[in-house]
Length: 332
Image: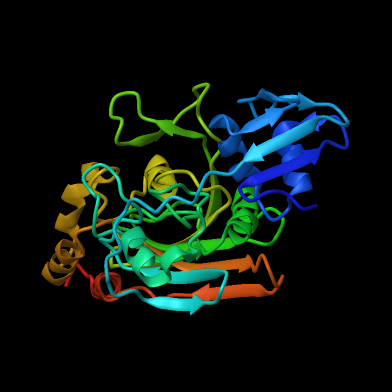
């Protein structure tokens, strides 16, 4: 179908939601992109502007989409060193260090991963995430280290987003984390199934909730190693089935085993540091963050269909604390 520049035009072939009809007619653009365009008033049906993605179209309805000129990303390009694990024309896999914010926000307009990606990738980043989050499919907390994948075009962004939305239940996506937690979970292997919502008393925190707005959250965990004599902490592998904000931190605190170094969800366990040797306490102070590392990331490449699997060993600060905990013996 030949259409004028910056204008898409099609006739619906079946009764369906407007966003679904457009995504079916133009598979190179994602449904999320069409939903944004609809909300912006850029879509008309039979000459009438429609702003709701769920609007029903009838067979034969003429649909027009006015595509805005590509806008430059607002964040400035910043030349920063990136630990690139893999890169091709569709995506880039980064090993994010602790302390690096993923995208600009209040108090973090510069010095973010997005600023570095704009400098590295130029105009090739996917625009679905918006000017503040180009290419960002998922995120890691500022003080969580590890693997993160970024889309370079809308088609790849759409394909990766589908896999993240399925939360690994279809076997395509796999995400696992290494965590150091206080104490030893009674069950050495299990699942935390507890919905999460924003805290009603502190908007900077999340909490387990049964409220109407709480979202399903599932974390599978396995104790890999019990640390200290007597035991004071554990090395745990966590596998996400969902991806809620602060999920692992909230869930492990919920079962009574918050992450070492977590200033938000583990503050009540600060006195537990007294059980550590001087070397372990020093390593914990040096860590100065939650002991959480995104160690494994697997997904299906949206263009080639090839299975992609990446591993990242724990960084030096995490490894130093782990080594000291292995030697921790308060009876010595």
